[in-house]
Image (cartoon, rainbow, N blue to C red; front, side, top):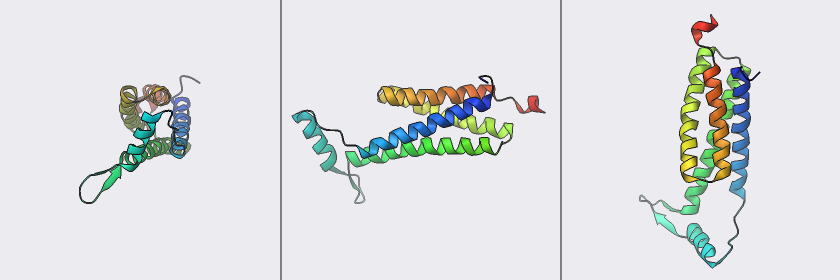
Length: 146
């Protein structure tokens, strides 16, 4: 079972959807300030709006919320795309290409998480990248299938 690429792709789908769910839940919770410095920081992030030109004034909290939502949506897109292709039993050559794209995108995502975030997103994106990489290298070449 561990040598079959479909197992690792389904594992990646589970991790992608789990990450999307967990990360989207964080959009609905507000962290509580623990001291006066944090209260001031949260107030500035919420209420201070920078002018980005052309009439666009956004707070740092609004920008972070948009980026956070986009990360959840990218994970959802990746998971649903792979699940669809697996259920339709897509051609091995197509799967190799799509999974290769996923490995590239989520590999870069993992590197960014390691550089700029904290343990839970690092672990989740690392598991996504690992399962995608394993499945990519286990997908047979088109010539081997024929």
